[in-house]
Length: 96
Length: 493
Image 1 (tube, chains in turn green, yellow):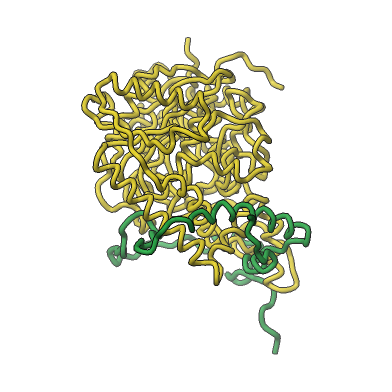
Image 2 (cartoon, each protein chain N blue to C red):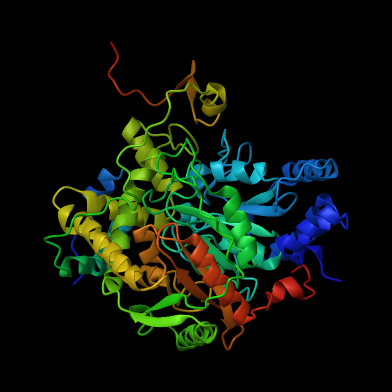
């Protein structure tokens, strides 16, 4: 059985603006993929710790040395919109 | 006389040092080949003619002055377009990064330059490395030089097609679930995914950070070892890079397999694998036995769940990593009234269907109420896969299997069926989940003349033994076929 999901909610969480037709198509595809992925639930795993990473790295320390960062103008040159050395986006707060 | 573009890295290096030809002549041979093959293949997204010319000229000057940077000095190589190259457009084959020109080199790219390699261009891929056919490129598919109606595999399909066709001597790819090994198998190349952390991921545009590794695609095992040796090693820019000494990878290539214990993964030797692939795998194993290896059947019961776990873990990590493409710092922006509208429209327009599918899948698997049942459970299955490998490596030195369940499929054949496409990676995914190295070596052609790859897997940092067995596989197979497109007189279409 394909898995039923609230695809509109998932698309909103993922910040992807999709039409109703696109939502229906992706919803159906994901249902089928998740039906296969659900197989992982068939295995007994009560005593199994999850693995999030292949190496047993707990923390990585480095010497406290200063080295140069990327040049700010180089980095900002790739942005769609900048002002005074900052990224510019549509207004996010109401004006005074 | 052999076309310079077809030489091995070792032979090209010898010729350079003996003064038979120059690095600029090697590069010219590469351009001549690309001029013919690119019209058929579309292996490259960008050819960096000016940068490559400068590198080749510098290599000639250095070699003439007695400065020798090692086996890659003066050798033309290609780089997958999800690796950042300073001043050279890097799009990951996505519209969302159209025009993006990184302000820095990936560490693997920097190390290639330090080794004197001549970087000729950026190769095509499935968008953000998500796919197994290179059909998911926003800039059009790459074709297989063995049969241009077929895919070269993916996601490093551009790198594979370029090296197989002779428009690069070797190339870098990235492998998250098989994206180096599967295209290598489908194009008759050697492709290696090293131990997780052996190569820095700094500057690799992240897909699934706990699985991604950079590695070589090459025309022989020694060529692959040369490239991997040049890029491996700890990097201060990647806290997950391996801090110890890099294993000696090429030391035992001539040692043979007398007494080496080789495990055959029984779960990967039956249902779902094409009969001709199974037969070629079985004869390769027989040749290893004849060369003195001890062959053992090994069962890894978690293997059949690994694919399902991967298609939860990789999308989950991808949904998080690709959140950075929001129209603010680089690439495409589609205007919207609010910040959220701008971001959501930018992402809808900039990402292709497979990337959107995986972001949605990962977002779902990580969302409240479903996390434990999907992502959490997949991480536990990952532990079971690691346990199966650990148990197997108590009995054997390496494990072997087919690399890909089939040879190259036709363009369009699987593009409407994500599940069939995902199954392409069934043999390669377990090594990514475990963080182990694995390599594909070409061993035979099928009845239609398409290459078949054989996979050798080893425990973490077991590269020396892995390449030792791979070299015996290569010798005993005597695979000396070249892609028809690289060997015949081809005309502009």
